[in-house]
Length: 391
Picture 1: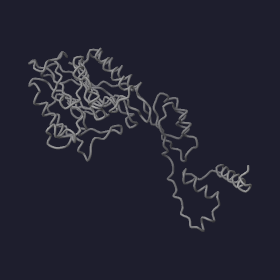
Picture 2 (picture 1 turned 60 degrees about the horizontal axis):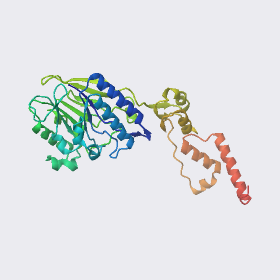
Picture 3 (picture 1 turned 180 degrees about the horizontal axis):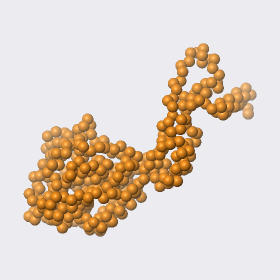
Picture 4 (picture 1 turned 90 degrees about the vertical axis):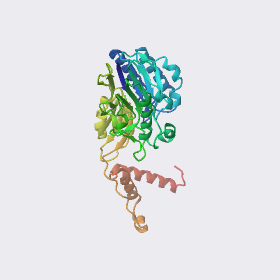
């Protein structure tokens, strides 16, 4: 049996207002080809199918595209809801979809409703004595909402995940291998800035020991790939969703099981770079000179010029089709505007006041042409005032 672990698709995600629909569609096509090529029996999606609880129609269309293509390629799909998903919306029709090979684990009752497959990938009935593999999906569990219903010892992520695993252990056939999908932040992983924090004071962390009895724990929530143990892994998201992930390789994990006593054989498959994010650093002229190299990327620019360059934002927008944001990183520390007494303030000329304001705002002394333009504009205003407002 061959299984593919992926998670955190975040269909419908926007990065600083830029859509990801084309990159998600390319990922779905790549994944479908991999499933067909490798003869994958089951695809696991460990939560955060969507980026929002109420998905955009484009995101719904992408999920429909993915499920249709993967089922046609011969794989079953087992998916859980994450903290970004609405478990109600994702789980609509889940009982009827089971028959098509799409298994959605979105409610507490689904935790003890396994998908059982034999080692050839065929479905086994819950009471079939033949040994196989039991797949259990644990939807994202918000401790405050479910801890009492689960009979957990405390209102923490550790307690509710422990209670969920205890329930799974009580119904697991003794001879079955166990694969669990869970959406949680497990100790030993490192978050990135594109994830929503689900912890408060550390209570969102669950220990690795929660999954000690699994043959494989397919984790979701963390967007960077992590191997917490040989049998406990985050696949990571298939696309980078923040500039902090631009250098993070993306992957899906293949798990092969050949029999009741075989050790899982794990293989990483690198996801192609389907969404390019680039942070460019340098002077404005230097960054603009490299624009042709990044025409297909979403771009964040860090300008190192010693002073603000007029028109920089517009020039960057024109040069980079995927321009996202700009910041100045090379400016000298802005001088603190001096505090003037009434006498010293009265002694300053208008040009001196303007020059001080310019330097405070831009970090460099006002150039001669700026002072000249100010003096010309001021003279015109004063002239109009003296003539009673007539040009």
